Image (cartoon, helix red, strand yellow):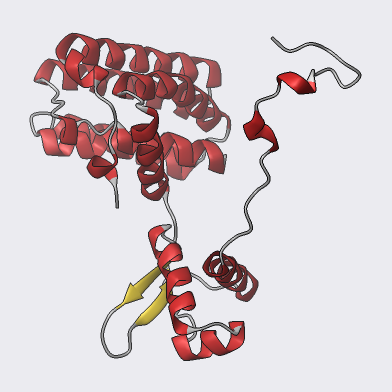
Length: 263
């Protein structure tokens, strides 16, 4: 237990890890950071080509192997794409929630985080996203949510369509929250919770229940009712957790592993 001192904390009780200095970045990491800064400074957009390897080696005063290591870091993070063949090379890409989901899955595997823990966190994040989506609602988001609900209803017997529209609906809500951090985290959790790789399936009854609550969430967002939207989403999360606990208890105890979600 920490004891108060002049700064409010007993320094002797702090763990050694808190005082470990950060190791100097590798040369390749520094180059990767410089390239990202250059992309931002130049206002490059996804699809825009970067300079050639020869030009970048010269401008950054590094060897080809160091540059390629830096480019590989950026490729894994989704910042760039390496196009093969004549006329190929590095082009600007855009990191998205799937890249974050992959990284999160890797961390979860090493910390032995279970599927249940992910659902628990999602139960807190999604209602906040729904409330903010109602606060910041716009015509485009409302229309897209309406279309998602309609598409799910039209093909409720097709599980592939259901899974697609389920993911699409939650992506729209998260994006509509107008908070990049909530959007990235919510969408990443949604990718991790895509039950297909873990064997989770939705019965027709379960699909219809999801459709009904999506309809309720859409209506409250369209009406600009943040409190009601949050409550509707909270109900959705509780029902989903109960369904998983009842139908797939072994999945709930399973540790999330990187190979299921790694890019």
